[in-house]
Image (tube, rainbow, N blue to C red; front, side, top):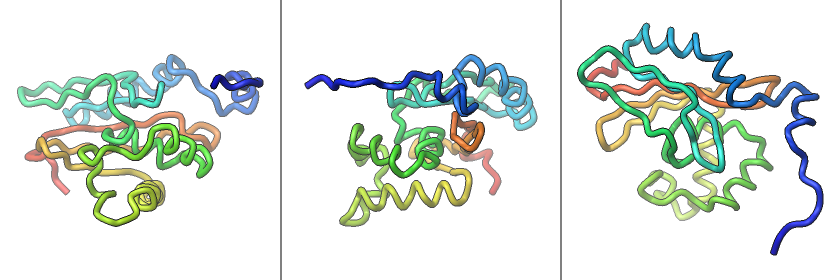
Length: 171
């Protein structure tokens, strides 16, 4: 059934200086993403959440033969750039997302199914990401992703990620 009532647009967020649109975020972060990608000679991306998906707003391409290309749109759960954004939502906003999206499929985040309480494990793992301030993810294709959230006025507005083949990752 359709919902009734009033839904705030972005104006109240602009008034509190916590809203940023994708163009503004890209304009602000583009030079830093370029510097990061160039200094590491790896793929660097700027991303945000749109329609419950992690989307790439901007990316760099390294000058190498073996590179990692990031999908423009990806599940919020499978992309570590999506996970770091989720991890920094308020508890109420996070719970609304989990209710709306459901738990991630097992192939996207198998670790949360290692317990008999996947919902609790998901919340705990996101809390751990928030407490550390970043996430390093090793996927089954030999790719390493390192992601960190971006904030404006104390609110998460996006994330930055660096991706490389596992063979070039030095811990």
